[in-house]
View (cartoon, one colour):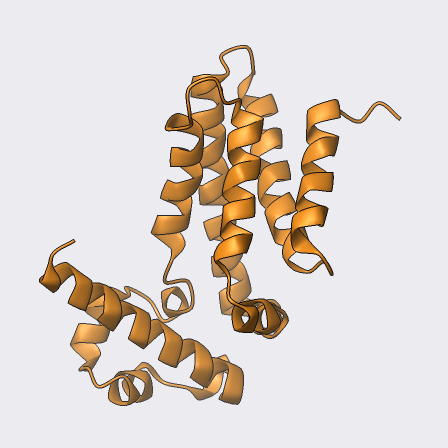
Length: 186
């Protein structure tokens, strides 16, 4: 990545971090995009060059997360199953989180759950990720129907989400993936 791209990435992250912090502190509806731009030291048009909507300010890694999900399936190691690749992606994601990020997860989720606009955006983003992941799974596991691939994608995304709130996220994620691997023959 060149210097210009790195600067854009840093600016985008700074804007999103500022917006999220202000939304958590004062509430989503009590913060304007003009305030965010001012505090992030950018103009309002620059803010909207990076983020098309106020809601998207909170989800700055949306596209990257979706691409990572798809890549984990399509670019997995030779001989690695889709299941193993998705579990590995989840574990690596948990390993990459700093303690402060884990601790702030509940506060972040509370903001999303209590803000109708963010809740709706989050659900729409989730469905996009689910559809993209299902398409990748179906491409790689041709015996699956679209419905089956979609159900697996939904389970995987839900397992990632649920494990974040667990006392031991990696153990929880492995446990959930074990259910997927064995099937639910109880």
